[in-house]
Image: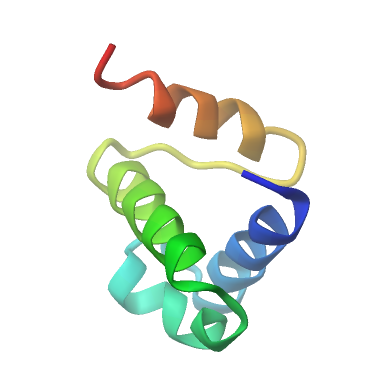
Length: 71
């Protein structure tokens, strides 16, 4: 996850107050590539299903947990 994608995800969650991608990504999806959108959607869906929360200080750490989920 690059800094721009992290910023967009944080912005979307902050705007909606939700980690559910269907409630969240609409506000930033036009600023994302398809690959970024798919990454954000998968990450947020995992966070929502697993009751994971993040903020500016730990979004990258939580994303690493998401990436390692199938190891």
